Length: 452
Image (cartoon, rainbow, N blue to C red; front, side, top):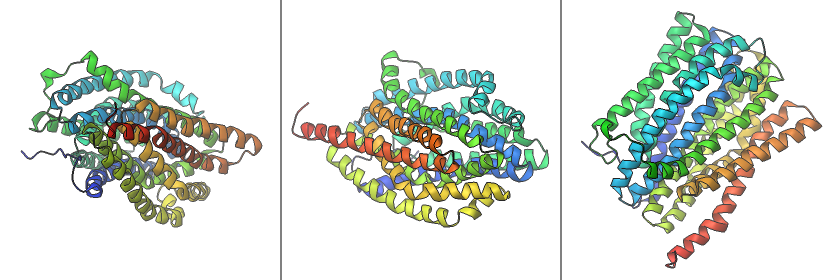
């Protein structure tokens, strides 16, 4: 069987980064497509209240998905460093420890999430007219957290060894199933928001089955044996040292967004539906920055493991240039065709106005988001996951919330909500870049000079 892993420590840098980034990009597009279809089906076949219910739950869902996504990125740094250093024994042990941990944690969080659903909806101040449908949707959706946990860690393993294509194929298959089930359960069987949630769970289950089958049967370095799944305490500490900060970072950002959602909810169902639709569009535009950021983490970690620090510097410059081009290609159409894009999700005129205003406010600042993703993942690729968490949390949470509290106190306007997103990106990017320039580059020079 042909090996799917890819060594990023030699060869053309731009080509290597693009080979990793493109499958990640398309995977994120497919993931966003699934979420968009959920909203499109609900908005067109059920109604505005149902769309608002799904929107009210979106940040709660992102809180949990973001936790496991961050965990997979942090874990992936350790996997990539072992792979770059050709340390396959420790790579094997780290993979088995991380997978078993994800199974245990995912199961525990799925059970807890079901019981905590009312509390979570209270946290976002879900309006009473939306609450019943939101409760139905979220309770069912949270069962799938188990599959989300396992899939994210497993796909993180493949990305870490340079194989970002295989997770793309499995995600595409799962997305196709999700779309078919959405239409069947909602448009044909009229199950409303429950049908959308059930479709999501079945598609997630399919993705886990496919990726686990691959890892059990492959002859590559990431092969998994069920009888070797165990929690090695020493390795688990290393894995958690890199994985937990990334997971907490994503969760804190999403938790912060729950409070932003409370502001959004105060403007009514039309604002909730319109801004929710804008967030769906935003997910597509931001896939460029997200994909390049994840590719950066893999590239940096492998080359740090191989002690090729000059190649790391060249890789960062390449990712900055790639991001600038990619954001222009997707950002400009989103800006100019904003009303038509929002209309895909809802026909309500007031909702379209809210969504259009948000898109046209945030799109011009997307390069700041890209810089944040590149440099925070660079810091993480060096093994400084805790620092990456701090710089991101300060910018994306403290600065953003401070701006919102101040701005909304002075003038309670929905425009302030839109502006808060670029504020967080700019502050986080500045902090991540500062840390890289002031500390990591100094460390690089010392190591290149033969120091410790």
